[in-house]
Length: 481
Image (cartoon, rainbow, N blue to C red):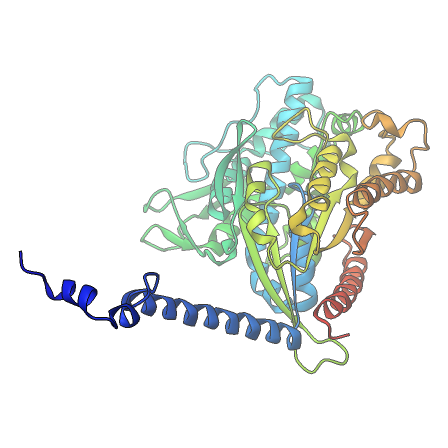
């Protein structure tokens, strides 16, 4: 067999071994891929440096609002809105009217169901009433202060109002299952929804003792603006005002509250006491109403606020992330830890006598301590500043004044006085101890505050104090001071 050209080069050409490429030298395609990779890496490095340079000259405070459900995160976010972007709250004001109405209706249903359970009722709990049905006409109002027997009649008068609960709740948000029952929740942007679909395109009326309300307002396609729904609810609410006040003032309810058989949210009590104002024509929620209005939120809400800081020419930014606190939502917290400047953790210390809705065996204070332990011990968060709000101190004061013993629910409290100062000090010491135990080698500070975030003046003062502390700490971290 004749030798090939390669055989001649390899065997006869004395220079072949010097001119052939090294065995480990990449091919032309491999060289092009490596060059492209190096260019991409360089671009990423330049962009990272540009972002770092931008942050040095345009500081941004990224805050995560964390805590269990109903700890006050959404209320604190409203305080940020009032302080830094009041126009956004003004734009939402009309939408919050429906939430106020819903808080009142939910409270009335709780009152009726609890009263029927404790005292019994010949007619049972008021049935769900279809406000667009012509089949039901409420009886006339009783005269004078109702006795126990007449309370059944009063509750029947409330049937049209209670029947609007599901429609109003579904209009505002959507249903989800919690602890075996259906609750309603909202996602960010719920205030922007303005269309409400009626159950029928026909012309129907909402019945009340003072007459009827045209449910469609002359709109023939079966749809009406949300304000029309609010007007329907407010009309029925105003018509039921005397019955609501008679029920709310009844001695039997006072007994249930004193025996702690009837538990209402503080917002509900506030709105029931403010019923005369809320049922006035043209009602719009006040700032205080919006702060107290309670509705469950799910998912992540992100807000950006700008502020000026002494000595800085450029505007500084807050970026706030309101993260859902229910147990099912806590798995979604981790991705938001990266690049966080600080975590604002809210622990409602008034909840010493309450248990999780998801787990009736877990005390809410204990749950907050477990969450706080996870956050303070997380390696991912070792450089993140921590701000602790021991919240709902106003509610705590009320419970202690009513004689609700801390040691009955927190046995380690022992025989200490059942008074605000020692109780708040006890809880503060426990949360501070958890922080110190998990940060022995860290120089970061803990900013701890006893708060009632519905108190606008005090809360906004705390926000400014926290802002200044975090801003200085952030400047130190970036090497600018």
